[in-house]
Length: 171
Image (tube, rainbow, N blue to C red; front, side, top):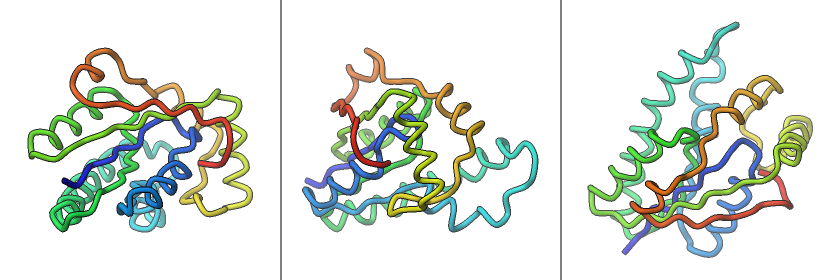
């Protein structure tokens, strides 16, 4: 049975690098919301407070990615989803949807110290390597880091979570 492999964690935790290793190990299909978002919407990003603009587009993109993921799953392949579900309730809602639609789910939660993550993001912004999708300015890094909610006992009771400490590599 194909598996939804959900990769979550704060900005710079190593999600993209870890996802790449899962692609190799599982022959799954990696879908990163940030990559899709950057290609579809970056040129339309407004100046100033873009958070409401971002949230509306992210919600639509999550729906599209899930629809596409089901096609991949139904073909027999795993999907490796990197969706940026940094707040617990949105993440739990998504996981419940996956399970209620009859798909197997494993969530991988990555983390690293904030200083390590900040350095990775600065390096990625500068060098634009393999895991680069878009520039993450310092203030957005701080906002997103402060919004990150790690899993709790309720999530652990509902579905499988594997914890990954990432202290080497880029996200």
